[in-house]
Image 1 (tube, helix red, strand yellow):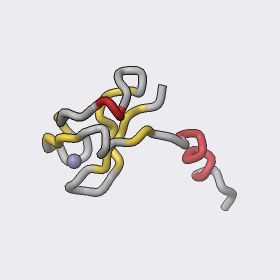
Image 2 (cartoon, helix red, strand yellow):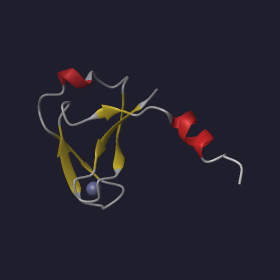
Image 3 (cartoon, helix red, strand yellow):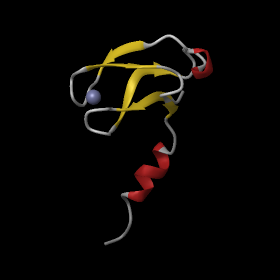
Length: 68
Ligand SMILES: [Zn+2]
């Protein structure tokens, strides 16, 4: 299952919220949810509108495999 990610407001990095798309429908997340960011270790709040579904994990792996 793809992970639900947000952009960390402190570093701009995409960070996983700890939830997956099976947990809930993003469009239904209208109340702010908080989680501790694994990148900057601050607590961020997010809503469905702020989040997105992680994609292209295999694509990212292939990207690093380019010949040198
Ligand atoms: Zn953060």
